[in-house]
Length: 457
Image 1 (cartoon, rainbow, N blue to C red):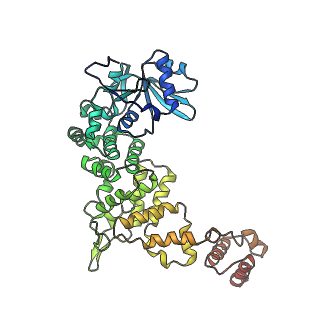
Image 2 (cartoon, rainbow, N blue to C red):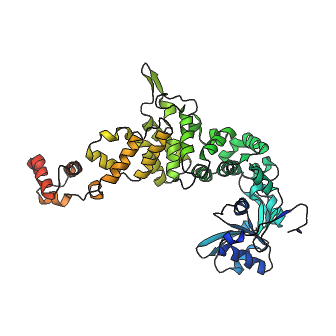
Image 3 (cartoon, rainbow, N blue to C red):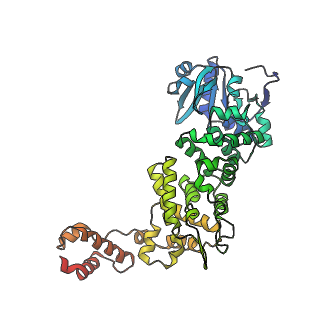
């Protein structure tokens, strides 16, 4: 680190910030410094400290080599030893501790072909964005800024460190990260940075599907989801990653039910209504994909505009998207269920008791219900069916919603039935009658079965 009066480094005193830092992070930094090494908090945690926001994650950089880091701490994991990265485990927390380094000779739009250990300033200048290029010394409560990151935070601007063409050429995922930071922080993308994204947008396809999915999920589950979608579109990334979503633009809908406009505007409005924090990723993707089938099912006749079968078509399109982005099987199935069932709410008040109870006890029903609420508020604004479902959930006792079975297969065998396909039919019919309030006991169920299927014993 250069002297505090070095004109290259802007030095700011941040008194009182250390009190908000976890003891384990301070312990790691202080241990490294006590051993004669330089050590700083770096990146997003320093950005958030400067903004007065409590950081969620903490990264540490140091002059210590990886083997020296491992020697200083009891529990370490050499996750990226060739890049000088070690995980230090303190209590329940894992901290990434990286040696100052430079990187060069990127060969695949992601990984550097050559890494060399370096100084703190050189380490900062190889990073992605100025707002993430800040160092903080918690012992002295001082922030070191080589790249005018504080100025860009004050200007609410996302700008690359150095040439955007170079930064994005090194790691194409940085284009998506630029959009994410702008959306989540409520910042603007600096003009040259945005122009470079537009020029290189097609290169995003060289990045692994898993990394793309992770970045998109962060865009859509954190503050600024609507702005994130708009920036994806403006930058050209949307057309490359999610052309099926891009295709929703200009797909007009009946004004009676959709005064907000076309399907694209409906999607943007729903994203604007999602919570700023803590959105379930499956819900976010359900919002994005629930009407994905409308682009291919729109029809017009003398009665108006229709989207017959859009949920079914949308389910298949969404399945292809999620396979392409390598979603887990569990998450994919949940999102597909959200798409498959989202139109059922329109008939919920006409459902017979048995069907209603099965509907209300669906797995992840809270996600279905929230998607329906957002769907309504993002269009016509009528949430009577949402209110009805909430009222039913409050009024129907758990033992009525999920009552124990009145009969089992063993009971049917005891009644003289031979095991076979008929068992499933009988048990389903018994449960249907039970949920409709027609059967209250095992004796009632046995009489019901004997009356309907007694001849088949």
